[in-house]
Length: 227
Image 1 (cartoon, rainbow, N blue to C red):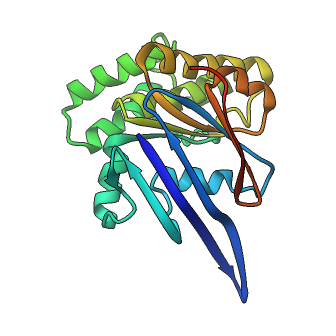
Image 2 (image 1 turned 45 degrees about the vertical axis):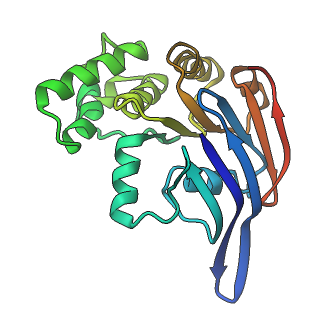
Image 3 (image 1 turned 180 degrees about the vertical axis):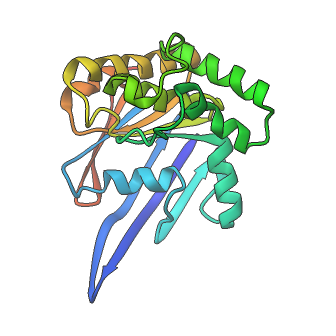
């Protein structure tokens, strides 16, 4: 499904070139739940941004289902990202003035769907993350875990090919983190959702099928845990 081949990403700061990624290659199959791990500065967030089409590599190849997404024009990249990929941010990225349902169905409206259809899609997504009774709550009326589950619902509402999660439990306590990770696990097992998650917590690995470990922009381990 996903193929990354010799991806490099360099940043220039003044006269200094920083190599965030230095020749990373791996494959992710449909329906896998992958954890990308590594210390701060290892390149894990950089690779996730490239995978989510939020950034471009300096060099290398990236395909999804044999489609070369690296060379997409910006408008096409944006449309593909909006319609085919889901992205969960660690800071929720919810609109405070909107209800949970509105935060989810706004993307459907952006795709051109009717309000009626968008509301139906939003309701289904929120029910899938266990928030069917919180549709009309605004973010200030939700716990941290509930906010993150709204963010997950927003990402899965369009039934994306791949769900990317950038440290989705970074701002949550252990119990709440378990709730969010259980939701991701259910999405993966029940619906066959392909999930790529960046995390630095070793105990999170019990929820995933494979772990890719990065160090200084290089893969140091690519380990399959289970099918």
